[in-house]
Length: 178
Image (cartoon, rainbow, N blue to C red; front, side):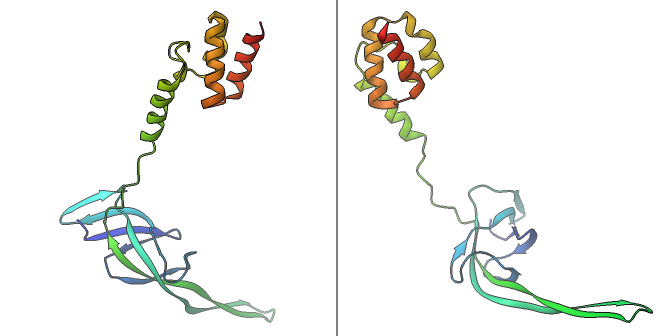
């Protein structure tokens, strides 16, 4: 499904196909580099997908150019006021390389913290209160009064070795002093 795409660049929308070159307002990417513009629609084979995720359009910046000269004239009758000025827009020439190619799947970040929690729970001393690894600082501060001295010491050791949360450390150290 890679017929055409509608992309957004510089506040304007363009309908593009693979291999197509076009002039757009100057982009910040260096000449010869590629980038992925925002894709608004991906269509082809009688199907379409609005705002697709994970199916980028890869665009290469081919060069820079100046647009057509625009002349601006100002005139006010009966006063002799005449001004003439103009400008040329700075443009980038881009080439659409691929449409709808899947990006390389990035490693999931959620899997690593889950493994760390399991490893930390396995390393934790046996005197640690039940469910300590999943407790928030507020939960720890509220429940330290109910814990034995061994549990407080184990939690303090765990906190210094793994999480090092200031609020939890303060609550545990205050309970340990009592």
